[in-house]
Amino acid sequence: MPIKELQYLKNDPLEHNGTPSQSSSNINKASKKAYIESYGCQMNFSDSEVVASILIKDGYTITDKLDQASLVLVNTCSIRDKAEQTVRKRLEYFNSKKKEHSSMTVGVLGCMAERLKHKFLEEEKIVDLVVGPDAYKDIPNLLKEVANEKEAVNVLLSKDETYGDVSPVRLNSNGVSAFVSITRGCDNMCTFCVVPFTRGRERSRDPKSILTEIKELVSKDYKEITLLGQNVDSYLWYGGGLKKDFNKATELQQKTALRFENLLSLVAKMHPKVRIRFSTSNPQDMSLAVLKVMAKYENICNYIHLPVQSGSNSILKKMNRQHTREEYFQLIDNIRKIIPDCGISHDMIAGFPTETDQDHQDTLELMEYVKYDFGFMFAYSERPGTLAARKIENDIPETIKKKRLSEIIQKQQNHSRFRTEKFVGKTVCVLIEKTSKRSEDYWSGRTTQNTVAVFHKKNYQIGDFVDVKITSCTSATLIGDAVQLSNHI
Image (cartoon, rainbow, N blue to C red; front, side, top):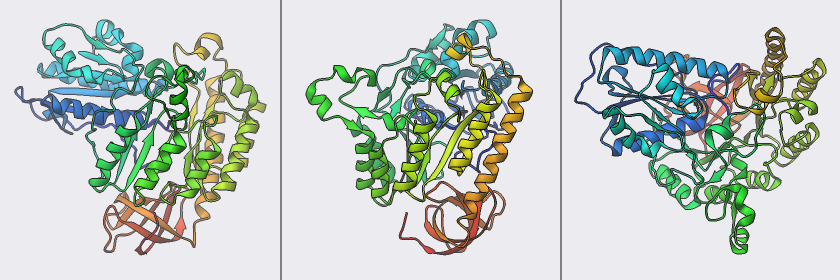
C-alpha cells in the first residue's frame, strides 16, 4: 500500500504532511481534546478515523491544533526506516511539549506501536501509552491506566475484523472522497515486509457492515469511495474468521462465500452515481473476474495500484513474491485487453539484497513494457524481524541503491509524461476535490485513471463531476478547460 514517504508521487490528493500546529498557549487542563497525527499508508489514515470515533464516544473532541490538545496520538508506519525515524522525531517533539504541559498525554498507535511496544514505554520513556492496530477500542481503558500511573500497552492482534461496528469520523475530509476498510492483515509473508507481524493474519469484514458504512457516506453526499485492504482483492467472507481457515468452513459457507468481485459488483450496482476505487491489489490475487466487473460498471474507476517490487525473477523469489515476471506481464496484458484505458501504478524496491546489475536491468525492462502512469519507489530498507533481515545479508552499498533508485525514478517520470500526453486533446471526466495548490482560480480533481487534473473554477463546486478538455500537461498533472457538468463518472 502506498505510503507518505515517497520518492515520486503524483500530487496524491490523499497525501498528509504530518505537520503540527505550532504551540502558542497553555493546554486547558479541564478539556478532553485529542490531536491525531497520521503517517504511512491509507489504512493508517482510515484507522485514525476509527480512533477519532472511539475517542468522541469517550467524551473527547478532535482538534487540529496541538496547543489545545490534552491527548496527542501518533498513528505510525514501520514499512521503511526513514518513516520510523520521522515518527521518532515527532514523538520526541511531543514529549518535549508534554514536559512543558504536564496535563498532556502522548500515545503511539499503529505498526510501530506493535513492533516496538515496551521500548517506547520503558527504555526511551517518550510516550504514555502504546496501542497496536487491533486494540484501538481499548484506548479509553488505557487512558485510565495512564491516569493511575500504570503501564498502558495493548498490542494484541485479533483473528477477526475489529472495527466493523465503528462508524469512522472523517478527519480532514473534503466531503467528497472517503476510505472504507474491508480487510485487515496479510498472509503473504514477503521477506522484506513487517505488515504480517504488525497487523496480523488476513481477515475480512462482514459485508453488511461495509455496505452500511458506504450507504451512510452516500447519504452525506460523498462522491467517491475507496475500498481498502493490505490485499484488497483477496477479500473473502464466509461468516468470519481468518482467510487461511476457509478450508475448515462448512460446505454451505464455502458455497455462499463472498469474494472481492462479488463485493465490488454489489457496491457498484447499489450506488451507480458514486465512484468506486480500491487499493491495494496483489498481483497473485488480481483475478480476471475482478477485471470483468471493473469493465462492466462505469462507476468503478479504471485504475489499479499493482505493486511488483522487482522485475527480476531471482529477486522476486528471494522476496517470496507469489508471482513471476512472466505472470505479471500476462496480468498486465489482460488488464490492457479488458480495460484498455486503465491507469496502472506500482511499488518498486531498488537494491534488494543480492540484486545484480542484470536484476536491475530486468526491472527497468519491465517498467518499459508496462509504462506505468505513476509509481512509488524506494531504496531497500532492512526491517528488523523480517525474514530478509534474518536470512539475507544487506549487501548492496547505499551508493548503488541510490543510483539504481535514481534510474527507476527517471524512467518513471518519462513514462508518466508519456501517459499524461495521451490525454491532451481529449475530454475527460474529473471529480472536483479541492482548490489547486498553485492557484486559487483553479479547481483540482482526478480522472477515473487517478490522474490529477486542474482547470479554471468558473461556476463549478467541490463534488461536481465535470467534463474537462485537456489542453496541456506535465508529467504529473493534466491542465484543461471545463466544458460542462458530466453525465459520466
